[in-house]
Every structure is written in C-alpha cells, then in structure tokens.
Length: 132
Image (cartoon, rainbow, N blue to C red):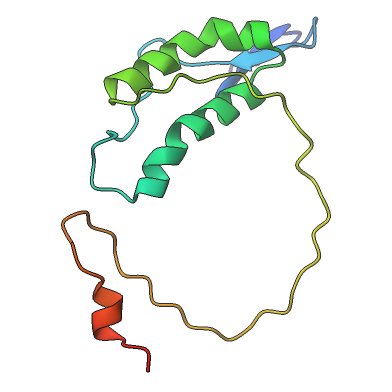
C-alpha cells in the first residue's frame, strides 16, 4: 500500500489544490479532452443555449482568480468551438449562492411533458389535450 503524506500540491477529482499558496485551479488528465453536445443536435434549445454558460460557471468556480481561469480556458473554448458553439467562456466571479428561500407547500399537480424533437412542427399538446 502506497501512502503519500506531506504533499503540497494535490490533484483531487477535477481541481488542483496548492496547499502552500491556498490557490486552486481546474485539473484535467492529459489524455482526457472535454466533449460537449453539438449545437445543431436534437436537444431542447434551452439546453443547448445554457451549455457555454454552465461551462463558464463551472470553470470559474474551480478557479481561485481570473488569472488561473485564463490559463485553462483555452482548452474549453476549443472544445466548445469544435462542437459548433460561437460563444467563448468568460470568468464569472463566484457569488454566494446560499440564499434562504421560503418553501411553498407542494401541490398535487401532474404535469405532462412530451419528449422534445425538432422534427415536430405542430403543437401536439393542444391537439391531444384541448382546453375547453
């Protein structure tokens, strides 16, 4: 069994932690390149629209400052460009997301969400479930 101790720089999951300086930045194995769904794929438009923003937010949260973000952003920009996205990722300052929200009472509502397909041209829910 190999036991490592007194390490100063540690790669943990997808982040590198520098314990002497207190900095952290994204980590990727050398042969593991990011791959995203194509911008022209048959996914809901809201999903495709949010991919560059979610990548920006994720890499920004893994970076302690904008300098470390800029060092690793080129790899992700190239991956987005190869998936036919026009946007580049930008550093988003980490905001505290823990805001107390009041919880509403859950209601017994049954929702029907048909699967998304760009081939469907009509409003199938209006045809199947007409509202009187």
